[in-house]
Length: 107
Figure 1 (tube, rainbow, N blue to C red):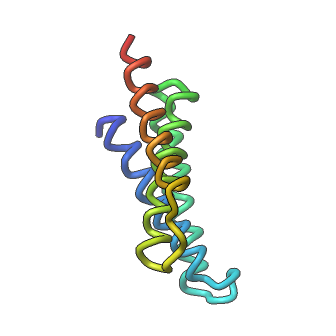
Figure 2 (cartoon, rainbow, N blue to C red):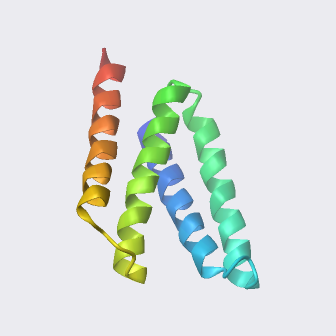
């Protein structure tokens, strides 16, 4: 499997783990808590595989940046968390940073 696909799986599983962490109600609900642990486990394992191919700085920035942006959007859509102009601008900055890292990694 390509490192880019592995990184995508790592990001998606990290986002799932974070959503389940929210749903677990402080880890007081068993099923979402176990799911959260499994999702984070998959995410870290996929990251370990990706690091065989990509630099750690690039990998972690993409993983954390895309995950953070996704969670902010999910928080807004699923739980009605505020999405003001500063948050939108900040998400755009994260996306711009990830694009910049992709461009710099290609050089």
